[in-house]
Amino acid sequence: MHADYIIDQNFSDITYAESDVKYKEYENCTFTNCDFRACSFIAVTFIDCNFIDCNFRGTKINHVSLRDVWFTKCDFTSVNFAMTDQILYEFHFKDSLLDYAQFYSLKLKKMQFINCSMIAVDFMESDLSEAMFDNCNLRHAVFIGTTAHKTDFSTSYDFIIDPEKNKLKRAIFSSDNLAGLLKKYDLVIK
Image 1 (cartoon, rainbow, N blue to C red):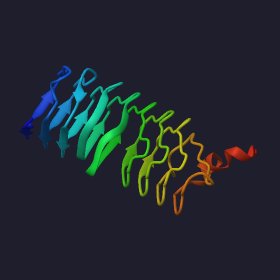
Image 2: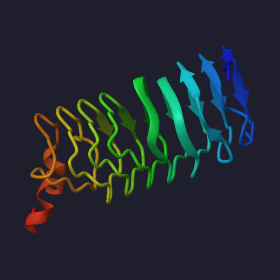
Image 3: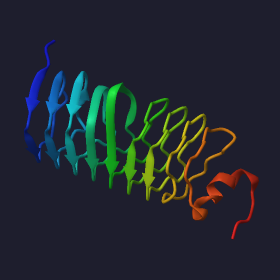
Image 4: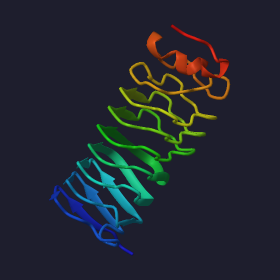
């Protein structure tokens, strides 16, 4: 099926139905206060797009290509990103809710997570090299087999990362959040 190509459009206050975005390509578009919860994302591409105050809670995101996309103040609670297209993609989150989201086994190099709630997020087997977690709550986030070379965790908090089960070469931590690296040793750190 041929994709519809949509460029330089602004979309506001729209509740999308299941098939509204299938087989479409959006470039340089902005979505504000839109609800995507009922959507089926199949063969969809977003290039240079911004999403502001949008709801994706529980959405099935399959075969989506995200290139230079920013999500600001969006809700991605319980969304599984495992099926996103990983060829030439880049997307970032700011002031967003990502609790219980799954990034299992994805290449997330240089991603930015800024002021996000990321409770119980699954980063197992992911590559987070050079990613930035700026002021993120990582309580109960899962880091096992994760590559986090040069990843910046210095302003984030409430995480537990086992250095023996992850690759953390030159990862950045602050002295205030080092306890999250030592949790398994049951130490008292003051």
